[in-house]
Structure formats: structure tokens, C-alpha cells
Length: 191
Image (cartoon, rainbow, N blue to C red; front, side):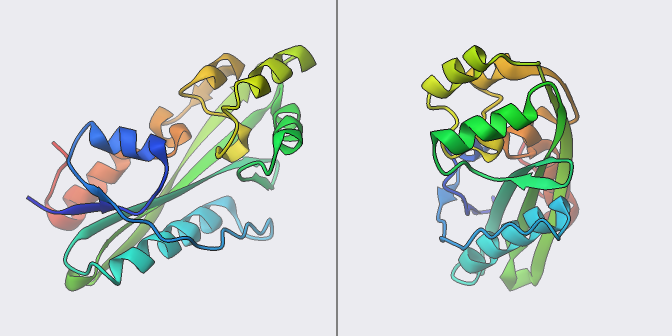
């Protein structure tokens, strides 16, 4: 049995992975700079790489999983809101529109010279929300620490008209695709 370390403080990623395997959580703080001049896929894979490689250097014999999620609307990258006002502006910009959710992820095992990154993209369409609905959602405080200022797995599900792609990617951890890559890289599955 391989030893797994999740290089993420995200409660959502911990919850998803805990459905499949025992693991440790060890994460490092990085400077999450988002530059709209880079593609969303480049940005999330670079951030996932940075998060994972820092932990992998200290745990070379273990498999390290890392991830980073961003919301993209017409070329603009939306990360985690700074405060309620920032969250309000993000959700207002998304209402009635379709946006993309990108999650970059890394898989590392330095003792086997494995440094692998990839990403998943899904699309989400929001209802044409009223200001009242937006304020009610903000009152839940669920927007905190969430890319795009919402969590589809919670009360944020009421904002969403439809999705295309991997639901778990929108939550922030495309577990099915990660499992396929673990099989490819290590002949190891989360089963």
C-alpha cells in the first residue's frame, strides 16, 4: 500500500479523498499569484506544482497530491474573495452567465523521479440571481476560502442552473481523473 500525503488545507479535498484512502495532510504556504496574462490551465497547474513540490522535497518516498482551483469568466481569473464585498462582486459578475472552473493537480514521488501535473476544466451556469438571493447566499458565509466565492457542494448549489463536466472538479478535486493518473504512473488505484 502506497503512503499518500495531501498537500492541501482544503476541507473539501480532504473530504473527497477520505472516501477512498487513508492519508496525511501536510501543506506549505505559497504565494498564490494569479496573472490574467497566463491561461487558467497554466495558472492552476503552476500553483498545484508549487504546492506539491515543496512537500515532495521533504517526503521523497511518498506520493504527494496537490491541487489548486480557479474560476474563469471571459478571461478574468477569480480566486478566493478577500471579503464580503469582493465575494458580492464576484457572484454578481457570474449571475446569468456560464463560467469555467479549472483545477490543476500535481502527483509527485521524487524517489521515483515523478513530477506530474495536469488539470480538469468544467463549466457552470448560474441562474440570473436577484440581489436578494446574492445577499442571502453571502449571509451563509460559505463564500469564504472558495474560488469564485461559492461552493457548489453546499448552499451554493442553489445558485447553479447547470454544469458540464466533472462535478468533483468544481468542488476542487477531480478524483476520477486523479485516480486514472495514479494507475498510469504507479499501477496504484484508490480502490
